[in-house]
Image (cartoon, rainbow, N blue to C red; front, side, top):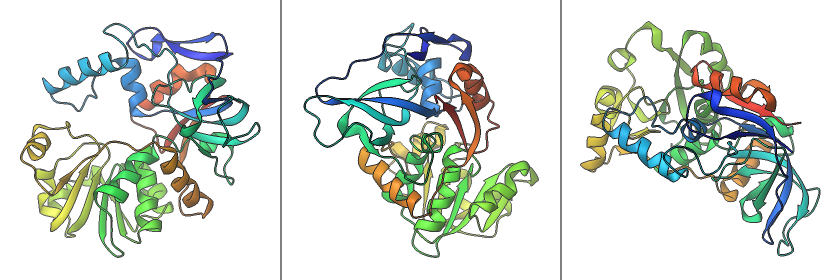
Length: 331
């Protein structure tokens, strides 16, 4: 089968398009013909072996070391095939699998990677039904990017109908899901923050108001007090957003080590600061499927690259200029 592997940590150039042996499913696994995956920040960490640029000095180096060890070693990742989210069709099942059949269309997320490949052997408990109203490539855009928004509003700071919600980074892969969830699932009044070229797109997916960050510091000029602020790009911190956060409001950060002040709020147990781990479980993917099939949420796709151009896809994602999700087609 065709696959993209990472044999050492580094820039996108370390990724190689190769032909390798197709995996054999274990007794509790299914083999799927994978038709797509999408790029997430964790894929950059897997490939690069270092913390995000927003991690401040010292903490960032420690996190980078921890990431390398978690991915398999100091010089190269143990899991060579990159990519977590997948969407495909089951072509064979292990002898202990009873809840899935050959021909079922499924999607989900593999924390061990392996999605940049034509075939994947996946434990059956990781699978959810593919949304029926999406193509394989469209559905591949859902795992990974949707999870931080789901966690933010389901578990950390659930909006009430009519709440004012500010989403910083509203035009990105996570932000586009967050705008739709806050508006269409929870009935919030949504304000999105993005660059000037993305204002109309963010409005089109449901934002009531859009702030163009290039026009000034909205944390100093906004007259609205927000009940929830979700910062999915880690460009702010709770201290800076205090002026526009309601007294009983909540600031949710997608990256808690983005600034020393945010780390301070974690250490001191500030109840207004929330952060959490992603939920990529099959149950979460089923919830998202229901919302997608009901027309309440849809993936926003910026660009689709063929598997052979995975290097270009990683370069585009790292540029920070993507609008929504960057998807890799394996059809």
